[in-house]
Amino acid sequence: MPDQSILIVGSVAYDSIKTPYGSRLHTLGGSATYSSIAASYFSSVNLVAVVGADFRDESTFQSHKIGMKCLTKASGETFQWVGEYRDNFSETLTIDTKLNVLSNFKPLLGSEEKNSEYLFLGNIDPELQKDVLNQMNQRPKLVVGDTMNYWIESKPKPLYEVIGLLDALLINESEVKLLAKEANLVKASRLILEKGPSILVIKRGGAGLIGFTSNDTFVIPAYPIDKVMDPTGAGDTFAGGFLGYLSAIGTLSKESLRHAMVIGSVMASFAVETFGLDRLDSLTDRDIRERYQNFREMTAFDTKAELRVPSRKQLSKK
Image 1: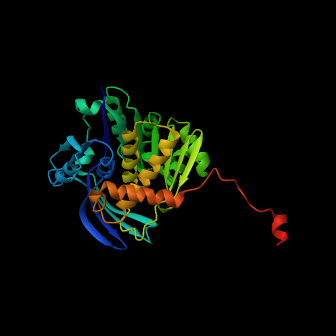
Image 2 (image 1 turned 90 degrees about the vertical axis):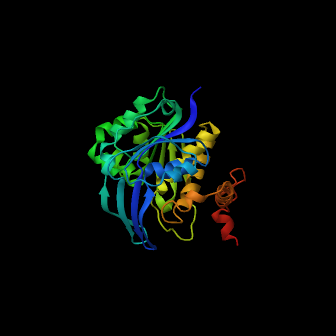
Image 3 (image 1 turned 30 degrees about the vertical axis):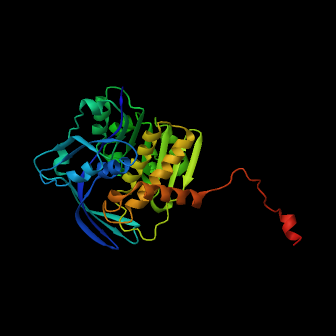
């Protein structure tokens, strides 16, 4: 029997972050960190990443029962990112990026990881993403990928090869347009779907999400938060919730994809409430259920009700 767990491949980092509401130095972050913790609330997770000799946060993964057999500890320092958010989070400034041990990262899967049915290829070099997929004993039931402007511009050929192998691609609005070389978002999305993925989810920050398949479009808002403290990792948290939910229910219907997008958005809403992992790390099942129910109530729309819009003639008589 193939293992039902999710395999998540990406970066584990130490982030130093400044926002309009404060700052945090050397806090645990990285694409694999946020996505694996979010997914762990719904399914079992195995992690593939590299950290340095300075890494001190194994207990965070252990507390979520995340498999770490493929978390490699190498000599040197863990990947570091220093960033600042300005103008009410409309501008993200990368001040410093130190790849450190990530620069020589070569993912090596164990026997359990090679049989995972769900795979998330986090935002890393597309050649590494493809290498991981090639190591699988059989094609996973669902392969989800992420990327960024840097890889679109610097490694387009291997990236396009990876995209052609994905079932779902999760990227932001500017990346969609850059990847498709098309300014119109809907046209760009259709062009990307023609490259291979059957599912495209566009992350739009505070504007919410748009999901596209060949025969469906689904738009949801972002969950309203009183104060966004730190948006770092929100997209990866969404990915973990999205994939975790789909793994838990085991189906890929139109309805399940829509529910997965809502779950992902709910999980991301927790992540942005505090710096780093503070809120995401301490959730309860009740927290998630209550916010999911609130989201449903806020976005409910009775599609079966008769549409009764008064005509201009009727209005003129009043």
